[in-house]
Image (cartoon, rainbow, N blue to C red):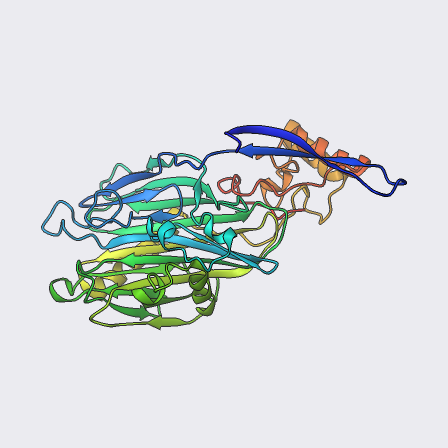
Length: 432
């Protein structure tokens, strides 16, 4: 067993045929232990608070614990209400005949309930891995009640195939219990991922004893919600995506034991199948004697190397019934538009290395980049990132050299425009 560190070795291949030389395969290994950086931050706005993570999840799965739950109106009579138990993104894809699914959902239950029937590659680790500390930015404005708090964290799947950036936005307004989430995902590998699916699971705890939950759907907002009963019949909580994303968005409110705690354990493969079947459809389960959970399907398609997918949605909790929840969802969507939080770029409207946007990579792109860098010429188009031929997150003379090497001496092709790093600088280009 190797300790942490960098290791190098070789595998010698002995060829029986005397006419073919033996050869060595160099192997470089990086060994790192499983670790967690400072992974969550408590963000408060007016009379409510929520814990957000540097992976795409919120809530800890621990009732009445200061770590995790959305505490609504913590400074008033409703301080005992913790409507958000846990929520997390679900990401899955197929590689050949194998299916890979990852999520932080259900917190500590994940490791305990993986059924033995799952393949070994699925049982090893199903949780996202944080790649840095969570950052918190105070974007409040001088006028009270405007602006927002923002958190940001980078993460990847345990196999490092898919990387991502999770951002949460909390409007600074004491009467608006709204959470806006933006997640960007990109394929960091050199292989194409088929049936790439992005979803989410939410365990709302509207009612403390969870025995009065009911589900509902508002088609005009694509809003899927849950509500309580008894003493908390006016409490509604739900999620709606920003319009203009995958047209096959779907969701369901499901009987908790049927999908998250079945007899076989927490089977993430079953959840992937459930999300796949929610292709533009909605399933609402309502029963006064069971616990309910919500699941959502945002995107399904093919992810080529370097491709990116961005998902934006609004979560909200209201004490004023369905009308109050609808108003909060509308506020959240308007808030995103007002602050330009989720302005989507067009898909594949540029190529990495094609700085002058003439649909090919040649010496004229190197000249274009040199003019931009040294004499204030026009930026690479249609995105500045298109000039980043060596994928180092910047456009400089080294990109021109990269293109020249590629064109004249068979050097490496332009890369993937450093997906993720260009989000605030005009968006990413597509790979060469």
